[in-house]
Image (cartoon, rainbow, N blue to C red; front, side, top):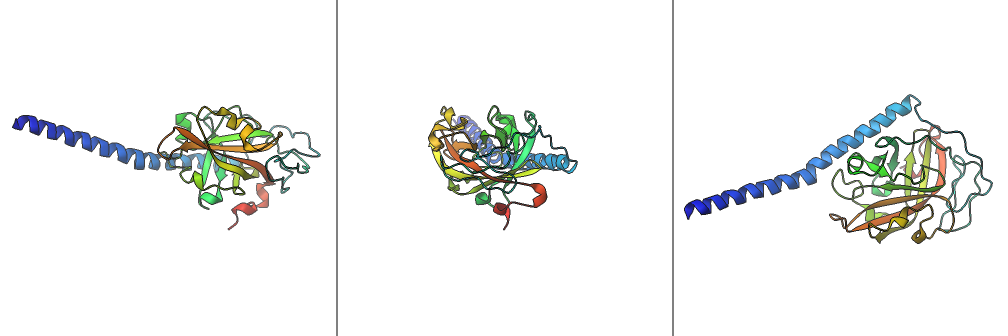
Length: 255
């Protein structure tokens, strides 16, 4: 009997130790690795940008009256509000070259989540991509272009990039740069809760967003609840303004 009790006790201790180690790995070590990986991706981008390695496609034709949520030329503000009147746009943002799968192409800033919050955006949403930053849904619009530029991120683990996602509110700024241009989006709706199978949230004109016509939109998605994945939280935003990086940081990032 003593041997049985001792064996069971040792097994319980072993299992308990393994559980503790797993929790430490999930809560701490994945975060350390993710933070290092995201910092590396940003360093890669900054080195590319310092060498002028920002691939741009030929300039797109200018718009005389952009749709709701569209952006104007550098420093020109777009309209806010879902489905509202269109803003006058002197020039569409330049279309970038194709994104490389798994590679970084932009950095995102969300002041509501902290003025030190910045994350790289990579192409793709596979697990190995989201371990290194935020992921752009392949097939959705490119940054600043007409359509729905859609991005996913972990709520918890791997750096907890969207841990405070529920704090986002209408009017909050989401700012991105591709090394040549600053893009400032303004949130119009969310956080909206839905199920993972609701793929309409990243449509060019998401039906439940309140937008009624084509524009330059942004969708952010993450898991809900905080430590689960039975649902998704969504926010939608429109491109409010753009400006060249030479003009300095946009107003939303000035403290």
